[in-house]
Length: 293
Image 1 (cartoon, one colour):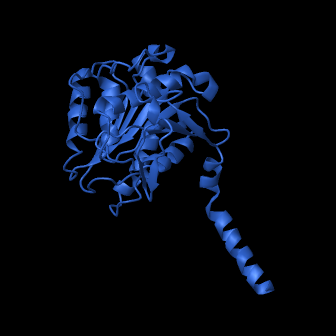
Image 2 (cartoon, helix red, strand yellow):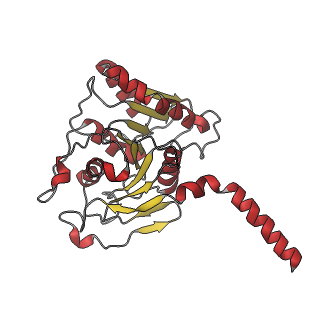
Image 3 (cartoon, one colour):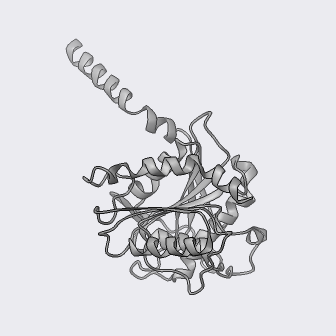
């Protein structure tokens, strides 16, 4: 029995040795924040519908929400980022393109909010793409409205998005917002345009109208060149930013395909380290903005 207990103690020690970085973040996870109190206007009856989560994804989202990952103690920089996982608008890849990205950003001083948005391609979905766009824009407005409560600056709220989420982020960044359903409220009076964008292999869908001028938000983009669906969008955006004399940085890797996430799902050595480039860009973001004033 003594030997058995000693073995358990050793394994417990090993577990505590490997977990502190994640545990430190997870200890600061805020409760879920609904985008609308009482449910989405026009769909209030669905507000209490349970989500379906399995393995790496979640779906059946009818009460869109944000989950906050607070910065590591002593590192908060006053900035926030809203993270949109991908999943083809059929599901949300909530772990590798949500939680992991939030932990990464929280470790760098950002208040990171993972957005669960409505899925218009899910089987029997009552929603259209404009509903998912509305969720994205509402999330930005909500954070601006409650910036003081969350300890963030209302003019330092960015968006980070993967794949299908990147389509929604692109529209929030560059297209006129969709009209609010119902009567609206005071939160709708805030700007829905993010202050910076991080697009990770964003999908090809975009708004009918896209405005990219010299005042466009600073943009960071990454994709693999052999990603059939999602390398072209960042090439198009980089060209538009170049023409507008707006600040954009793009990293296109020779190979790696789609869904390499935060670098964990690829065997391509340099692609696995793409987040190092993001860290460097984040470190100079204030300088980029200062040069524009």
